[in-house]
Image 1 (tube, protein in one colour):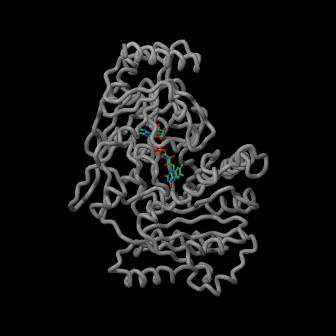
Image 2 (cartoon, rainbow, N blue to C red; image 1 turned 90 degrees about the vertical axis):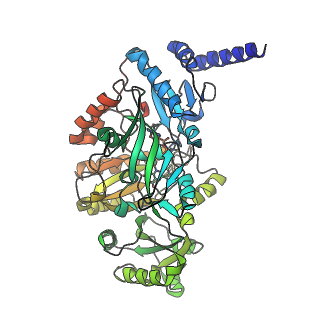
Image 3 (cartoon, rainbow, N blue to C red; image 1 turned 90 degrees about the horizontal axis):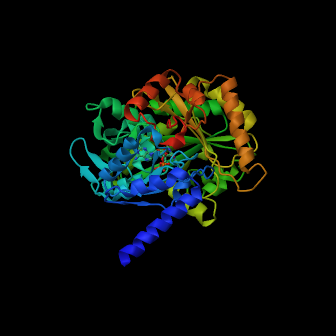
Amino acid sequence: KQKNILFIRSFMILFLSCLTIRNNHCFSNILSLNTLQLDGHFNYDDVHHAAKDFGNRYQSLPIAVLHPKSVSDIATTVKHIWDMGPTSELTVAARGHGHSLQGQAQAHRGVVINMESLKGHEMKIYTGKFPYVDVSGGELWINILHESLKYGLTPKSWTDYLHLTVGGTLSNAGISGQAFRHGPQISNVHQLEVVTGKGKVVNCSREQNEDLFHSVLGGLGQFGIITRARISLEAAPAMVKWIRVLYTDFATFTRDQEHLISAQNKFDYIEGFVIINRTGLLNNWRTYFNPQDPARASQFKSDGKTLFCLELAKYYNLDKAEMVNEEVQKLLSGLSYIPSTLFLSEVTYVEFLDRVHVSEVKLRSKGLWEVPHPWLNLFIPKSKIHTFAEGVFGNILTQTSNGPILIYPVNKSKWDNRTSVVIPEEDIFYLVAFLTSAVPSSTGTDGLEHILTQNRRILEFCEIATLGVKQYLPHYTTQEEWKAHFGPRWEVFAQRKSIYDPLAIFAPGQRIFQKAI
Ligand code: FAD
């Protein structure tokens, strides 16, 4: 009797799901998925969560969400869809932590794979001369940090925010203030396990199946689903000296940043941000950062001018605190910031790396986390960064910004040009990230429409001034635009797609390829 009740319940859920999305093929697709033998399960009724992301602007409902318990669940599902051939409209999107901005992890009427269900497997840490950790593709970086710290180890390259999955950031690049030194996260991976578009489970590295390895890194989810990754580790520090200094002159600011990323004796982290029209800034900072010269700092007046803040970090262990103080003093003495604006904070390594989560908790409590995020991330060649700043900070964005604007240089030599990520041609290029939040239903300067118009103006300016800019976390709606984004690398990208995902099953939300039906 109980079996009958369960069957009727499942049947009703399928039927209602299909009614909701009004699709004739839907019912047979769901029935066929239901025949698969899995360790995990499909969910057909609770699919709305998979139609949302951090960007909060794009929503595509899948017909099913797979909660895999094993790699074979993923392989079986993909193989099943591959076997259905081009007549089936089913696509597959791996969903990491859903922190995409424009529906990149969504699959309209397709299957979304909730990669975090796979993360329950134990992380395996290998100590020794070249330590590393083996993790699931659905693992969150914050968990990897905590686990590796138990062995006194840590990954080398990070994102600013750690509540993102390994598969999600490796599909883009994964960059933060350590990238100038260690390269992006995709430069710090030894090996991957990938499920290809034919449902095959393949191990790959620089030595084995190297083309697949490089395709997947920065590959926007197009070539396979990352189910496991081997990530390089190093000895972890206990503490961090976290420093901020201010500049009014952009040229001096970037000169110092470029000097620091090529200096012999280095900081461990170098970023920067632009502060537009924030008169009370220094007072706000005092809760986190202590000015080195409080009397002079209190006299500093920004008068609403645009300021540039250099943000630095030096890692250390307590037994070396004195030595690190001297090193930091020496490094700072070579810089030309406004002397009274040296702010210093000493925090634990975890506090430093998990800093954005503190803001998340605050914003969530005010209902300001789940708002639209029309972010724009750009890579700008070093030779064009002044023209960019003049046009954007001197003209387009002079009044206010609705969120942080990050700006920092990285060394191209730390990026592997065999991966799929697209970067500018020059040896040094900048990441400029407009991390804006829109106030829902506002029609003012903090509203979505205004911010989107501003983004368009920035992109148009870059185009007209031929700055050679590339989008990071790119978003385009036509293949022509994607071709322009990839430039001479398009052919290789398209060829790799035809090898590893010939039916264009994967990551339809990127809108690069369309499944031919
Ligand atoms: P999702 O959004 O779920 O997926 C992203 C893409 O990857 C999708 O196309 C998806 O299909 C694909 N994908 C997901 N998992 C897999 C997998 N296992 N195998 C194959 N494909 C997969 N980025 C930086 O580089 N540096 C930063 O400092 C940074 N800070 C951020 C801060 C915040 C608050 C947010 C929201 C984002 C930030 N990002 C940053 C961007 C972030 O790296 C990307 O949005 C990333 O895709 C999010 O990871 P996710 O796990 O949520 O992936």
